[in-house]
Length: 274
Image 1: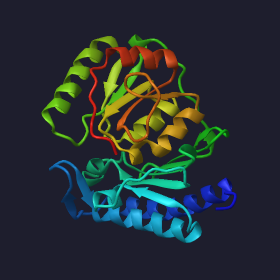
Image 2 (image 1 turned 90 degrees about the horizontal axis):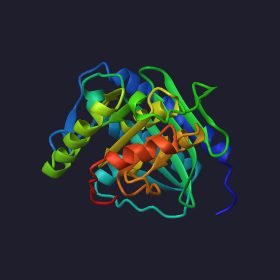
Image 3 (image 1 turned 90 degrees about the vertical axis):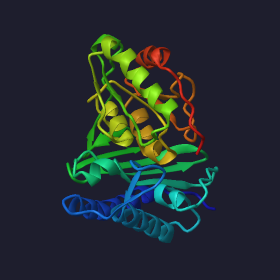
C-alpha cells in the first residue's frame, strides 16, 4: 500500500456523505420500514442500510486497499476487525431511534483510522444542516467555521450529556439510573438526546461540557473522537484512563479536570468488546 493522500480521502468521503445526507433528509419525513436487532429498541431501517451501501461502495471503489467497519455490516454478521490498515468506520444513521420518530437529532458518521489513529472525521446531520469535520492536526469545524470546547472545569456549572442506550440488560439499566441520580444534583443540567456521535460533537463545539456512555460501539465514536480532540477537548475511558475504541465506553469533556471529576463519580459497567 502506497502513501495515502488524506485530503483526497476527505474529499471523496465528503461527496458521498452529502449524497447520503440527501437520502436521510428525505426519508426522515416518511413512513419507515423498521426492523429490530439485539433488542426491541435496537432498530434498523432501510435508510441505514442504503446509506451504508452508498458509503462503502463509493469508498471501496476509490480506495480498494482500505478496510471497513460498518454498523449494519457487523449487525448482519461481518466480523468487527480493527487493524493498522486504513479503516473507514461508518455509522450510517447514528440516532436511529430518533430517525424513526422523525426527531432531527440524527447523523451520518464517517471516520478514517490509520495505524489505529484517527485521521479523518465527518459527522453530518442533514436534517439540521450541521456538518462537523476534522482532519488530524488541522482543527475541528462546524459548517466550515472553527469550533472549540468550552474549557469548563467546574462540575456545578456543567451541562452533561448522558444516554440510556439500546440495551435493556438489568445491570446496565441500574448503572444508567445510578449515574443519573448521582450526577443530577451536582451539575448544571443533564441531557439525553439519543445520539452518541452528536453528543460528542456538541461537546466539541461548546454546546455541552461533558458526555459519557456505556455500550456504544466503535462506529458511534470513531469520527466524533477526532472532532473532540481537534476542538481541544478530552476523550478518555469512563474510568478516566486511555480511550479504547473497541471497549464500548466513552467519556469526553471540555477539559481534563472536568473529565476526572465526572469519572470519579461514575458507577462503571463493562459491555462485551467490539
